[in-house]
Image (cartoon, rainbow, N blue to C red; front, side, top):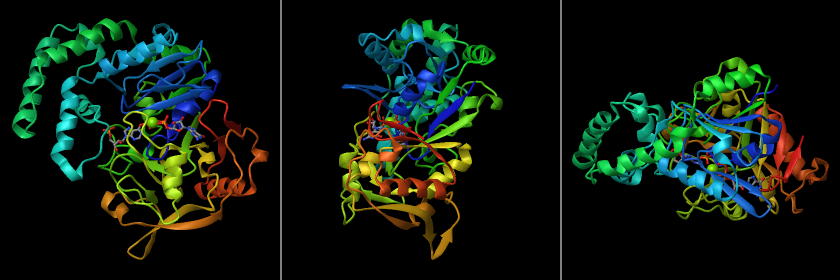
Length: 431
Ligand code: GDP
Ligand code: IMO
Ligand code: MG
């Protein structure tokens, strides 16, 4: 039995969906433990592309149980859309999926607050996905959240009235936005009662039974370590813990039930939304490096958000970020994705340290402003012109690509155990 946590260790969109879908056949259970519809995990099988927001990336496989844990936040409208998309594609999702009855529901007022707060912040906005994630986690911690199990509780209507009183005061009086109508909230609750409640389950019990039976479990993260609410580039982060440790609390399993931690990262770096990004080369606001390497990454890597369609910012591989992630997650192996995107670059760079105020830093500063001031220290390696797209045999890689991977392993002090060379399920080198 091997239970693995698979997480993103940069700023999200590292290719978690692809890697989880690929590992799923070796697993019996795939479980999401945090985040919600801010996630967009892409699965490519031949000419068919599937983007998942809440549902674990093992869902396309037969005989695999998919679980959504208590640490996630679920939007009834979006999750039902996702269920319908899979049902239309012939996936018996109602048989394969169970949702923790302790999941928090994202309701229309969470989305309204998310939008109104971002608008009020103007230039200083976080650049959230607008999915109501922050306000929903806020309500959870403030103990006024509505969970799946609450849909059958007697006091639900009174709690909604109380929440609306507070939220609408905030929206109208403080943020200058429109009030949320109760009927819209009721519509979301009715939909959740009709379509999600039948899938509700005691997820810790299901996991416990599977663990007892010696089954393999894959814990699928969302976002990435640099977006973790504690360990990321605060306040430019999401509102949940995205690190491997969150798998335990977000599903209700103990620390002995994790054996491997797979850290998924691109062979370069991307970020979507605002916040510090030391190795940034290119963004849609007009920033572009003189050799066009960042533009090459954005174009060849098709770097547009899977959830929001927003263009992603791009830059060189940042080993300081990955070293930090290896430490805080206990990463046992790296899955490097999108190596093929670097094909055709004359040279590739690796950020191996930061300098700030003339001093070399040992690790990432906690303060976002200090991180903004960091200047990357680069090692420059030779690029390669041959195509690595779709390669499955590591020995066929160009020498320069092998040298880059070796250097990543050395600097990050972690072995690379998987290498992805294209979006398709088949585009993989096992190492
Ligand atoms: P996730 O959020 O971590 O699951 O990643 P996303 O799905 O948001 O973004 C990753 C994008 O890169 C998707 O469009 C994938 O199909 C694509 N992708 C994943 N691995 C590779 C790879 O090795 N090479 C290329 N060219 N594309 C990849
Ligand atoms: P996956 O799972 C990339 C970013 C947003 C914003 C910040 C806060 O596909 O890797 P939020 O809506 O969560 O309050 O936004 O976090 N963000 C992501 N960036 N991939 C994601 O998910 C993300 N989920 C949130 O862009 O900067
Ligand atoms: Mg994504």
